[in-house]
Length: 381
Length: 138
Ligand SMILES: [Zn+2]
Image (cartoon, rainbow over all chains, first blue to last red):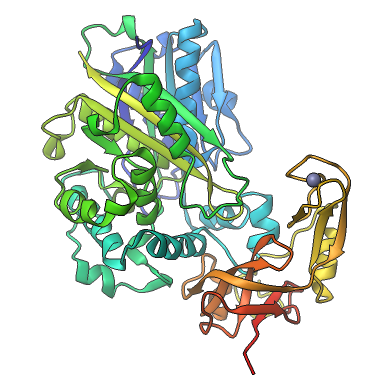
């Protein structure tokens, strides 16, 4: 029996180059306001607030709540980047179950210009600052280049398999007015793009954007009759292997096992899926971790189900084409699945959209992401 | 403002904490400091205040052999930070050390590395950072 539902999901416009007057506060506040308006609630009815933002410093959640005039009895700040949306949602559902709050707004986003991006990649954490940046190894591209190479060897994939994922997501983006890159991309163009860190080329790497996403979560019995995404389960895994493995299996694996067990949903029940796509290789890893496709069958699945867009995967275009708005990366996929379940996805609406799943992945500690989570949602009205 | 290298973008500098000071001092002298747990024998990189395996606080530093094997690598053509553009292309690899731990490091010669290559610690780079070189047969 689901206790909580998402009744609104917003995304500000994403921009590659923010105007000088844009600030992290403003973009977060815009997403919050849009989500609350969409929910039909008044901001005075919101009694819980959670935020994740890399660029909010020196401010914290309370500063943002104060600036927006949100008076709440539940407040949370999450620091887990690509895993933040799932983590915030997991705690929000628990808060609603426990009666600590009844209407919670969650937001994630950043003003991400060149300076903010450089600071983020050189000072992401102590290990990056001390042990990676000076190598010089700045930013995650090189780490995921090595991971992609290992994955190709272990799972018998070829560069074109990754290209097909990038190309398919660009096709989905063509149907999403909010995506920053919407013009079609061919496999030839994918291969002709400059190499970044072998074997990663330009279109394997997410474009950094400024923007924010937000959702409104309420007790399910308050939402009767509203088109909504009922939260069937949120499960998480942190630091599964001390960065001592090869990174090809993520925390999504344990999270998925727990999710299928606790919700009774099977991977084959999923109608729409957002997988955290910082790189095509991580799309592959998580499709395998979720149990959507067996590792040995991945190449066929990409050719027959992903490339054809027969499978509703990352239907917004994902971060690869819609853009990565800093720490909103994880919430972007959640917003897209909620839109699909509420049948608000316009030209890219999946015909069947009853069960949705979203993964979160992130926080590279030394070699690969250390956090993973799975959210399972069900359409209700 | 240009830094010592003449680049217009400052290179991200070396940052140390009390826990890693000796490690980076050793690096600048061409040594690779590892830690060994006196209780369970586990070797670990990089320096920590406890053994990550058994949680013993009895860990001691020792000079690693500096020898290892390339597990995987990438040739970087577009670095994540503009200060490193002048260095590209260069090679970063995951190296499995003889003692067990894996570390990330730069390997020379650039773009001429293959998986399985044996490597050894070379002279540090101009910033005093570890650098490895491939051991060629014969
Ligand atoms: Zn020990």
